[in-house]
Length: 248
Image (cartoon, rainbow, N blue to C red; front, top):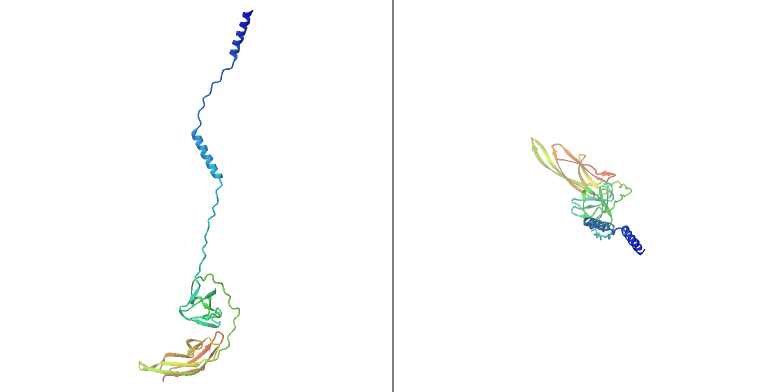
């Protein structure tokens, strides 16, 4: 009986041993892919760089203060400076060649400048003035609204008309060079100039307040020359009496 029991125990132990699960064998695995890790690291750094906040640098801009040369007008010849833009306006002064004036503004083909006395302004034609300095900043000026016509000037009074003749002979015909010195009295206060006429043709234009003129012409034998002087402004004119001279 005892042997049977031992036999049963041994049989049972053998059966249990056969039914035990086998121990799992460790599985060999390969190491990490180094190139993949490098690529992932670069991508991570690049992503961090894109998302990183970049400090904003505001540059300091130094704006220089502009310096402008003082504007000026120079004149190469005597130039009329009037109260408005046009020959009908009263003459303020004649700016002499070589002088300069301070420009105050412009309009069209005119500059407005300060008179030499500094007490008033007057207008000069731009063609006769040479600007310098910063004139582009000057304002646009407004012309006088109205023009007041000047009164009729008084006719000049001829005082003398001295003349001389220098005779010449050409092809048996005599002729002469006539020299005439005209003098008159300036009676007007509203003229802008004087005109001298010989045989009804204009031979000279003179400035206001003129009182004398010398004319030289050629006369054939038997001819004569007739003269008169006219005081004028841009609205009216008045002329002197006529005088006639000849070389016979």
